[in-house]
Image 1 (cartoon, rainbow, N blue to C red):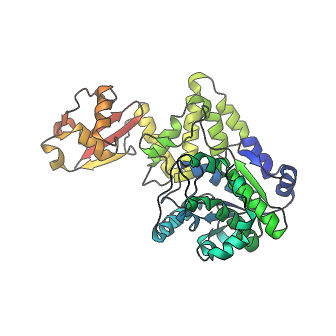
Image 2: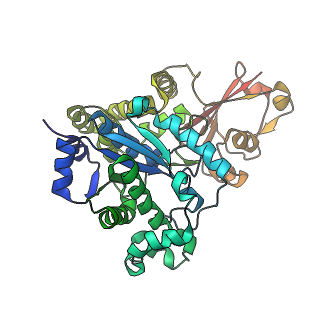
Image 3: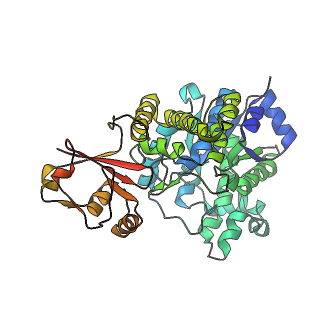
Length: 408
């Protein structure tokens, strides 16, 4: 019988690992405690965290115990990994609020009942540290020369790396040590951009506790061209329905490029690999059926089956022969709002279809905006009550983005 390692390897999650043979044997023969860290820098997780949630779920189903470490302490400093500028400083109140939001989203993937999983905040120990004691106990084990070889620091040196951020690797390593001491946590998992920080933690545990700890990173979610996935025209693809609607979420996956379908099915769904390979190998136009399955499955995981069904129904109405627009993103307007006429650019701004009127003017000039199926060529177009058919009007942006307006 295969272990969770075999599952993760087959589905394409694993990128790098320490102590390869001992770690494979550990995952196969023992039930261990592992952790993944989440810095609460926003009030929602985004699609960049999706892989971490999937890996945690697979690990828990195999009998291993997850720790979701919320970075209430480290978020007050900011991880320089993958960043070109220093992160904005956050208040303790914001960090607490964001942490609560995270737990709700994590609970869709992880069972926290009866300590099958643990959520802990590293602020519990980091915010109480005595600086001199920390330097003497932990800092002595870190070589500045070695730290500067890490990609997360090298990439920042030319633009400027603050001493505040330079401490981040020490704190993350100390987190691993504390979790080992408190919960016998012996594995840290994370995206491949965390590799140097994970190595620092395994090394610190070996030096301080005299035992081996392990690290494993998984591939970042990228397109076949190597670009990060999860960025939309309006920003990040959030897991919170208030920030990215289930329909928008569904449409993102429905419209990914053909070469990315099989990889996303393997990484972001629980479909058996036989089905993943079958769907991913569909020829020509048939690959669109695989995209529909992908979009439905990932939307169901994040937002639940009801919302996934609604999103699928809305998409089929827009792109098929249906006429049920109930679940398309909608903005309701007062009759007074349109009685004297309202500009096309004002409506698009109101709906969040554009971030500025300049963007809207460029879209119209490029032929990328239509109202009720008619292409707009006048950027000063005024829309009045007569333009609402049975009180409804549809604006289409580009080839794939629809927004409905209702007058009441």
